[in-house]
Amino acid sequence: MYRDLSSCNTYNYGDATYWDARYVQEAEMGHFDWYQRYSSLRPFIRMYIPSYSSRVLVVGCGNALMSEDMVKDGYEDITNIDISSVAIEMMRRKYESIPQLKYMQMDVRDMSFFSDESFDCVIDKGTLDSLMCGTDAPTSAARMLGEVSRLLKAGGIYMLITYGDPNVRMLHLDKPVYNWRIILYIIPRPGFQKLANNSSTSRSYLEPVPLTEKGLLPPDFVVEDPDSHFIYVCKKMDETELSSITTYPLDVDHL
Image (cartoon, rainbow, N blue to C red):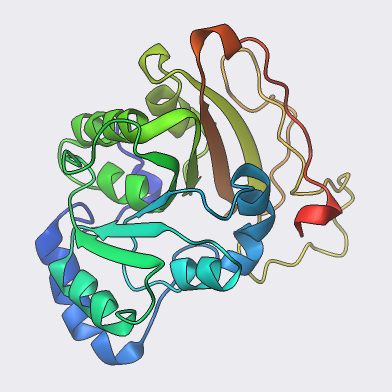
């Protein structure tokens, strides 16, 4: 119920010691982007973060190229945090000449360094998943998501890219205290090819996925790639706005 065991293994992905050792061991291998690269996520980021001057927080940044690619695309203010001091020092040295990128060692469960409503968007590519594989997962998840909600301005976006389907993620995300209106997209893993004999009706991954009143996938909904990634776009709403927002598909202007 509380841990997404299907995507976990024997490593404690919520522990700084594990990540420090891993980044030391893999230092010569260069960068690694979890789940999806920016090119795949760009339509969603351009739609939900339309202003290049938006203040963006990337949590669990690791040594990924995601933030660098966003700067190349025009974004001007990206703060990156990670629990690993090793990863942060590597990235600080790498990007010391790029003022649009800032790197700080920090635990997402305690981001008290930042004041309330500091960011227009928080991007999470696998960090919540890591906590869900750690000890005391429900408490860690609640602490992290509470901090994310606190840091978002009204109208701000928490964009979560995860392996967790609505059965295991909505119970953590869909809480009144966060004031989030949640839109879901499903994107296949990089390199996925639909089977030639698959007769299911193809839908664009740029279309929001319909959810039941309980926030779950309809019983007849088919996920073509069993290893798909789920993109939860959580918009922080004022109470008066909670019932007025409508979902909409992305269009070619954001590709």
